[in-house]
Amino acid sequence: MTANIFQVTSPVDGSIYLEREYVSGAQLDQALEEASKAQLKWQARSITERAEVCNRTIDIFQQSKARHGQELAQQMGRPIRYGDGEVAGVVERSSYMIDIAADALADIKIKDPTTERLIKRVPLGTVLTIAPWNYPYLTAINSVIPAIMAGNAVILKHSSQTPLCAERLEECFRDAGLPSGVFQSLHITHEDTASAIGSGKINYVAFTGSVPAGARIEEAIAGQFMGSGLELGGKDPAYVRADANLPHAIESLVDGAFFNSGQSCCGIERIYVNRSVFKDFVDGFVALTKQYTLGSPLEAETTLGPLVNVKAAEFVRNQTAEAISQGAKALIDPTLFPLDQPGSNYLAPQILIDVDHSMRVMTEESFGPVIGIMAVDSDDEAIALMNDSEFGLTASVWTEDIAVATAIGERVQTGTFFSNRCDYLDPALAWTGIKNSGRGCTLSRVGYEALTRPKSYHFRVLA
Image (cartoon, rainbow, N blue to C red; front, side, top):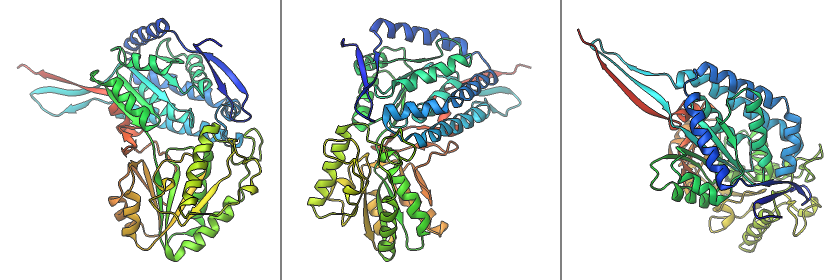
């Protein structure tokens, strides 16, 4: 295998699923030039014309949802039964951002009888979207559709674990009639990505990934005077109050913790429960978790697939074992899930109690199917623990008292605050994080602000 070829190892069985070739430096330079030229023509198109192309793209995309589910299972391990969910999310987010574009991008006019003044929202130029493997379509579409709707060109660099997803999006845009060069998917090395950012031909970077990788993006951007949106890690907390609807909280939080095998930056990674309902909550949580089926993501009955690779699984195993050695108690017998074996990327879900914040499992992102649950005695204690984190992506409270939920939300340091739900991106709301969860935002009308720049017009009316 030559140096410029990379392989995708399927988490299903460790086989080589496909091979792809990284673009050369010359090919990358050519793509950047094509994007720049195509963008100038694309921004001259009306928002209505852009919407027609983007809507056709999404229609074409969802027509192949069965294929997308199969390919997602092979590339990143999500059970095939959940493939339609990612497709539905792409349709929901894209449709919303297309529908609000005309209003979100409208000129801001200043009322004045003696002058004509307005602010236009002008596209930035070429947007580089760098997307991860865990939600390969959803994380990409958050910036791709609004960037194109705003009149930008887009280059998509996808994870080397899910390159086929980038190619499928490019096929859909092409078949929908998007002009050549406006959207390009490129398989690019990390080194060439940094070079592209520093070339002066990229005008904005939309990145989703780890905190260290986000720091490297900032290093590459330094001195370029360009904007960026960084969605990084999470250690998202939930707080279950004494007045919570326990069956609803249990069902929702089990799903929030273990969906996608816990490989979600906004998944639930730590739970605080009022002591008066702690036992009932934990008993219900354990009972529901035992109903999961760990197996091949290609099988219809599987509800918990493998982690993306053995390294990821071993990280979670080590984090869990360390917590147990420090006094945590594991409530799930791994033998209930026979595929969980040392050296395997198939990992049983695990619930830990008797945990505290001296343990990495309660402070360090796990990105796997393990959850720590702590008892607390008050709202103040829960809030302090929720805020005791380097991350701040989402947080949730489970209560029947919305006034109390609102008051707690004012004090919790997070980008999105939920009450009685979790692990969901509402396209009408800004998707954003604080602390080491990143900066900037996607989605909502606010998301369009990052993908455009203001340009002021001032015309004096002469008598």
